[in-house]
Amino acid sequence: MIVAVASGKGGTGKTTVAVSLALAAVAEGNAPVALLDCDVESPDDALFLDAEFDRKQECGLPVPEVDAEVCNLCGRCTEVCEFHALTVLPDRVLVFPGLCHGCGSCVSNCPESAIRERLRVIGLLEAGHAGELAFARGTLRVGEAMATPVIRQLKQWQLNGRTRPQTIILDAPPGTACPVVETVRGADFALLVTEPTPFGLHDLEQAVDVIRDVLRIPVGVVINREMGSDPRVGDYCARAGVPILLRIPFDRRVAEAYSEGIPLIEAEPAYGQVFRTLLSSIAAEVDS
Image (cartoon, rainbow, N blue to C red; front, top):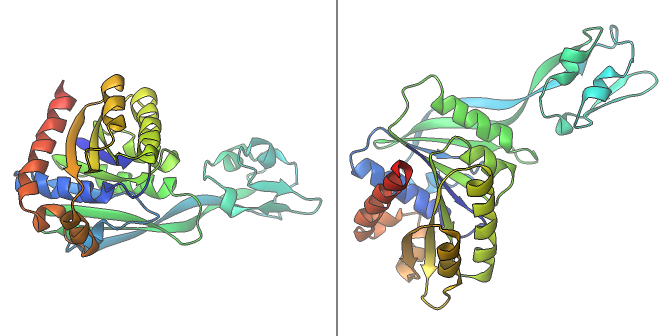
């Protein structure tokens, strides 16, 4: 079972939930369990885990290099490049690596075979373990704009060609843009972490629209920092037919554990059973 933990906005407690869910799965005896930190612009799951990395791999995009001695400046490469990563001048072809998406169209369409590809490194993949939990993360290089290729390659690196863990937790980036879509793609279920605020509700609605209604992945909600004073998130979930699987009350102890880098189910052991029940609820939703 692959569960993506996502949120329409940042700061809702998504990392707290993802790490706790993974550790609860290990405690439940669902080993092997894997946690993939796909929030590659800010991968902080390791701050809550005593993780040891034993494998590293650079990742990147194949970008074009033009052989000026072979190129006849016909301009075919610029015609097929959807992202405007090449332009033809009177005496040479300019390549803009930061715009290239690595699709390979310019290479396959060059009539003179004047273009070859080289790897432009944009991030780093790391894998290892935290106790019995298999753990991996991707890190986008500072200054790079495209997180999606790093996420895609992290998932391929960990999930293809190897014995797949019984339970896989994907910690997605916040928002609803391409990096989130790439993370949740192929998941069996998406757990959306929100907060009972107008901003939380607005972004939750967007996340449900993208993940459930467009990607057709079933979703459930965790309401974090609930104070019992704003029913609008609950009302929306009831209208939209989205199950609320867990409510975490506003609690200073939860915030203190987060600030000290202590997983919630370790700081407050009573939450261990809460998250094991949450895992069972997700499995039931997947099977329904």
